[in-house]
Length: 386
Ligand SMILES: [Zn+2]
Image (tube, rainbow, N blue to C red):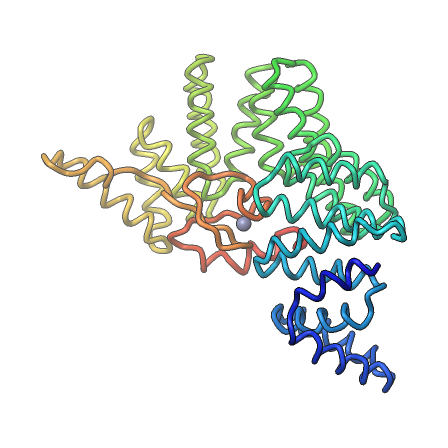
């Protein structure tokens, strides 16, 4: 492990001070206390300070891969990707690693590469980790999430399945949902390759495991064998999309035109509108209905106008459009949110998706114009952080 010591030389003078402090503490037998304090600082998000302490510990204990792995993970969180990768590679170069430490190192490196946007290299490292079959649930979960984010659906489904067998209760349910989404992802890949039958089977299995996943319903809508199944799936998908309903309805409408089912789809749109009281969903659905049934759309907006400035704006836009004023920009009359914000990482994206393209969280996007109102309610529903 002497290589790690050499790498540490690059850390600079502050490390030496820290190292001597660590040795002093170590002789006083207060390592447990230091560990607990670091844990608390970590929970508070004080990455800079924790990193400085870990550097000191690495210097004093160059034979502890776990500390190096922790430091590398913190480096990634605070944007120091090059050093995170270097630390992971140094740990992986050691021949004395325990099995799970090697897996953790590969998962960490995979996550560095994912953060960097290097998906093929990340998938390579993560698949290597997967082939080593981690036995610790924490590493297995980390691996499943990372594979999921890399879009490596097949190994991701395997990792979620393995995790489900190792955990119980809420975590097992989350693993089953993870596997359902991964199977839906595999169905998407099969559709892209024209393997329709395979796609249908995978989509159906994905829905069985993740019946509340908008993504799984969207894939089912695209793969469905019958028009009736597709209509049901489009409706479920836009209902689960919430503020992103507009995107799903638009795609469903395209499908309906191609399959001569516009009237049936509009009927389902009306049904969804009657069934929801959530202002953001009402606004999104009514905006899509407006072209087909302006009266129903206007009455839906009026129903929630007291609780929604977006509904008031939609009514105003409709009134302006009715005046047929020359020179009024059509963009002013465009309904629906024009940007979404991720409740997990605060990234802003133009297009709705069931998964945030920045942090990989599922079902975390909300309307960028009114994020705060839904934050508390929605964050409780989000899966545990990576
Ligand atoms: Zn995000």
